[in-house]
Length: 639
Image 1 (tube, rainbow, N blue to C red):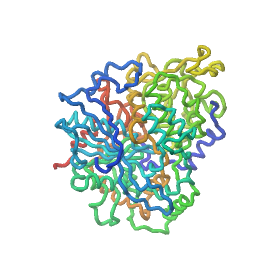
Image 2: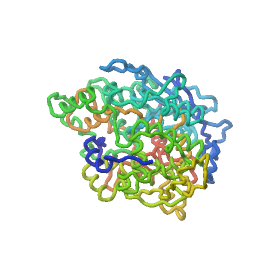
Image 3: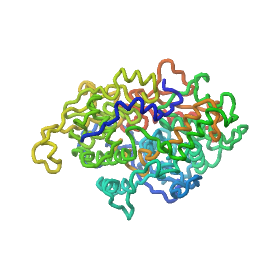
Image 4: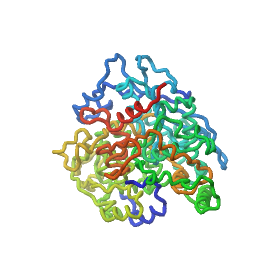
């Protein structure tokens, strides 16, 4: 079972384990939003297509025609997404706080029609069910696009009820510059984003100032765990002011790290008085939902979330834990350690490049990919590409054949970046199909069975981020003559094959021997759309390192000044739904005895909990949406 603290791997751990792999490597090749933009994403509940209106010539599964059957209503239900914001002044010891950082940002998903088929005009507090979600590690509110939309639609179809979904961004998302992505989406032209982020071409007199460093963002040192909880409480109280209503029909949840934040919110004290509980997080909702994170055990002695303050909550500022905490905070303030949560192969460029890749995969899925060949990609993202496309440690360390030396369609490249058969980083894995069109072989990198066992013993959380499942790699590279050609102006017929993608619903056990129908659950076409469409972002560009530091602090026993995680034991009395991906991060075994309702989604990877198709019901029911709706229906109070 995954360590229940899910402490983020320290820089020391990462350096010790990965230094031998990474060093010297380089790649050779609603209310609350009066002014918010509204994006109408009309997913038709009777849709027999795959939602792709951009000329994708791939074959559609016949199962699509049987999915999401429509109720006998004349109008078509759809979902409106608004970018909401709520003013909440950020207190910082540093001057010149960006104006945007004085707002809490969130995505607000509402139906276009009420249950009487009239235009939807309710206030949030009058919806039948209201979900508040928090995204995972390095994830933005946009990572919930598909799941949130489908929850709204299915509540209407299955229960004939109105559900609203609110997904909060953490405060550091105020530091993003989305001008290039938004304009590219508007014009349906990825070159607009390329020119903005790489060529310094302005948009509406605004020029990209470059990727920020820790030194550029001192305010991150003031964006900690308490701010995350206070922001959620502020939006929750604004949209559903009545505490009784919150206890009756609000459900709070999160995916991955958002599941940890859900747990800490439930145990949080908001008035600083341990003797009062009306303000406590667990009293702000009818129940809690945690997706693919540590399973809460029924046995209290095994629940590490109860370690904090086991001997009382009186703070001793002189004890070792408090002194270490103060030293760590001071290092953040002074910039002696990074204020940005850093991962070895992910940075801001990786995040906006992924959205650009999703755009071209949606708009031109069958066209040969040139995006990563043409751009002057930085070292961190290059490292990620090399991690994906190295067959062995030797290949990784040598400047040999890389991903730029292969011919992929845009859709196949997106698949190779996210699919669990190719992507080695667990927090980015989804099961979207398989590669075809050329030779494909197994790879022994980055984890061999031996290294996996060592990591599991020394740093289990880091080991959990890297997949130890069988991974594959394309092997038919371009020749030198191929490299002289371009897809638009080929001088000769390329000798290397063009790799294409088999979507999840076209996988057949008797044909595709490297995967199975049971292990493929996400539609790559819908997945591409969910990554870039709408007002939010899939990723969190500059996650505050203080959040991870303080989540680690409340997994220890000594109480820390200002970290009011005082009600974890009382929070155990609330209804709890936990859904784990069978191939995700929350490891479940035969000895797991959960406190609440536990569902293991067969074949699901970590990202699949948010992206698994709900458009192919005849093939397979989505393992997340109906359980969440049923859980909410079961535990809503009588109004």
